[in-house]
Length: 162
Image (cartoon, rainbow, N blue to C red; front, side, top):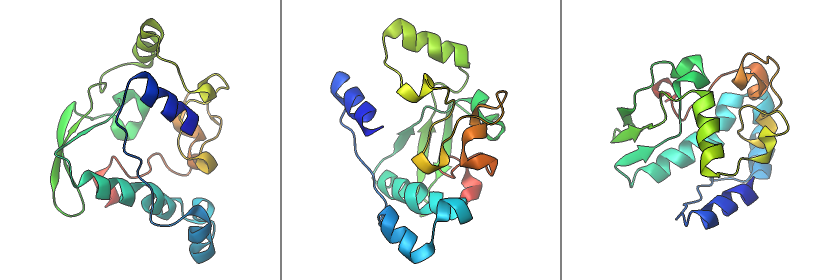
């Protein structure tokens, strides 16, 4: 989905910072095996959580697109909240879409002419890393296609993951 990222950056003149993990997928695999299958929490920690938290150290505010309806783990999401990084630094985490419904998001995108990731047209309802994103197993649970149903969150947005 790098092409979508690049399209959005060009369309909206965004100054994006690409955050990458310390090791490549191949290096991680040769050291630890296929973590997304055997230890998905550890895989997420190496590939997503640690790199993002390191990058966020230089900022005071973190904007997210999280919404309460996305998952039971997000039901109490606040529009603004303090978020502790592992170093102890506190960020202001802002989730302006926290109370938006799915219908409101799709309507806004359509009315505003915002292109969508093509995977939505193919039936995907929650999109993350390639090996851990599948079509939903349960049509009533948008995130049931993530991590083969073994977990709900990667760890970026929940303090308990640290």
